[in-house]
Amino acid sequence: MQITELSKSSKQRQRFLALSAEQQSIWLDPAEKEFSKHGFKAASMNQILLEAGASKGQSYYYFQDKADLYRAVIERAFKRFLALADLKYPKPCSPEDFWRQSAANMAIVSTIMHQDARLADLARGIHQDLAAQQVLAEFMQMLTQRLTVLIVIGREVGAVRQDIPLDLLVSTAFSAMREVDNWFANHMEAVLPDEHETLNLRAAQIIFMMLAPADMSTRLTHTLSTKSGDQK
Image (tube, rainbow, N blue to C red):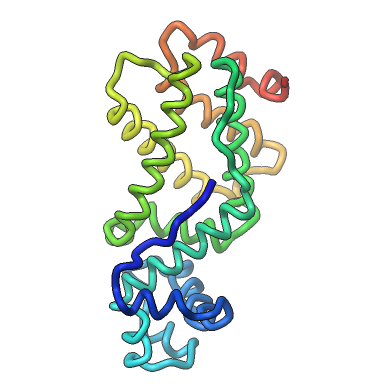
């Protein structure tokens, strides 16, 4: 999966993107730390500037405001996530194959969030902060577009129902996936390692049961059981 740069319109943004990765990190490292700890709304721009060793005047040269900096932080974090996950759209030959491949992708996402506390904290902040979601409207739209492609692929092999409008399916699935992500982000430490895979499969099953044709529920349950989920 490829990702394009977000929010390139402002002059400040163009200046920031022209910096080297090391120069960008001077801004993004302390900002990511602050946003991860406090979320977007409660994060202190003054604290970020203090740790970056920069002034407000310098920040305005690269960022329009705190929201602009937050978008840059999330964009870099998402690139890091994609590099770790190496997610690919399914290329299924059957409904079972589609569900199995999609569940495997969800397991990868959950594992990465379990292993990378900073990414999990940023994700938690997005889920819990309406202001953050509003700031990241462009980013959320991009995720919705990815999910739309996934659901269309599922429809092509008969894994996803056709009796409900595509946009309704996408919005319903996206909301459910956000709730699952939010739950894992807030309960990850309480989930035992040997329970993690099974719980992730069950969460995937909840989402796919909403998407699958009604007459496929038994096949889906079998496909995403712990034992059959390992079948090829």
